[in-house]
Length: 526
Image (cartoon, rainbow, N blue to C red; front, top):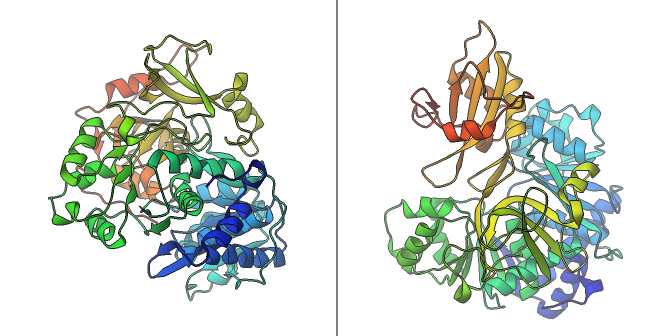
């Protein structure tokens, strides 16, 4: 379904499709299902409660919630009145939560009750919060009431605001590379194109069932909802990924399109084969970052082809080919309406077959993010010369197909999560016994990154690795906590004193490297 340019906003998407599809099922979470009419009504009703609380156009509403209707309801309601949703990674701990709230200037925080203890490390006096609303059963303790009140009931439905295609719908935080995480300002039209581009590449129709275990605080799952909304398909959303439950749930849902991240495929292949792997209705999996050998192994075992592609929070799903046109080892071709260049360090285009940085640009207004919230200098840096600099190293072959090689940025990707080495280093340096720390990626058995840290202790200090793990668990998401530790006396540096992380990556693990998994330490998950 193609909307005219002025109607490429979330309120228009909801309104047009509610009129078209009515009581057709749109979204199922657990035992509850929304129809297309339900989604529009939920947006208008929750928007009424936001307006009653003084939330207006441009105000930010932070959401620290798991995969549940309330999260999506609030995202839709923000879009309905021109407010801005700020989904927060549910693994975030006190320092990260404080940063997201302060950086976004959120006026409202909606938080799941079980996550309330994380606010003990948040200095609310520095924040712009006017309301904290709690979803779920509030703990019976003396401090619970200090954090907020239950999420208000749905309000009287209100008419949609005159939202413009370039207005910001959401701020999605992506990994920092040389500094803190950046809030990507995603316009309404970008969200529309996320749905439209994915529909075309995955060849989605109204007869499809889209199933995902991915979290709604990432663009992947949010995009899946846009795909269902625009195509008339039904989306089934699960709370989290479970290797043991994946195939039974997939069969039960009747899913025809499934969304996986790179590390999930090796995890599924590591399990013993079951009959459910062939009893499904799935016709395609969207699985960026899956190793080529495992794409073939997954296809042979399950009968399901995996579609590769390239996308980022700042851009869109803009490089890819339909499954019949997919070339092994390739992420596909640039999509119509977008431009790509591969350049050297001075932004000069390199010849086909030569590796360089991927630069991207959109022909349509607002099809990409508008920049980084509150970080104009980072926005200018990333969009210099009027091209978005991805920080990814690729090759464009003579036939127009792109191959992804690696990342230029100092970021780590583990189990689908982008991790800022800078942020991990800041937590490590907060430990009283650590003098210096450098965090970098090393390859794991799952053909993805694992987090490793090289640490210099302060003179006379001793530090047990397990004690450092406990320190980190209270201060950073579980997936960011280093698996490998090297206690060293010096770090490789340039003449100007900068740590040469490429040398640490090349050196990797040694005989003296401590491995959290080798000693059987299991991380707490908040």
